[in-house]
Length: 56
Image (cartoon, rainbow, N blue to C red; front, side, top):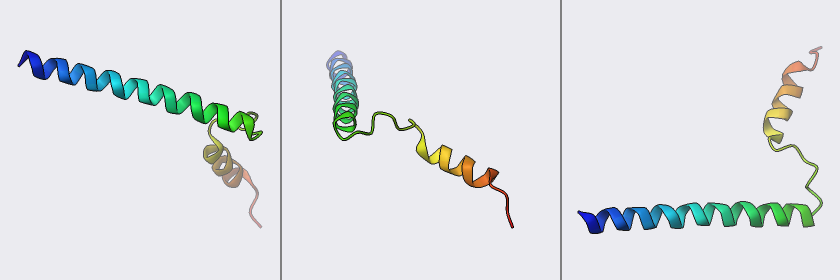
């Protein structure tokens, strides 16, 4: 049981490290591509704009 707990803790640690690496890498790539000024939630912004636009 103790071995299983250690394995689970190690896997969670690897998962957290991987998520951090992906976040850092994607942020760096976005900045290099000129996307640093984009909204963090563009889909929500597009939906809000669509819903608030007047219909004809």
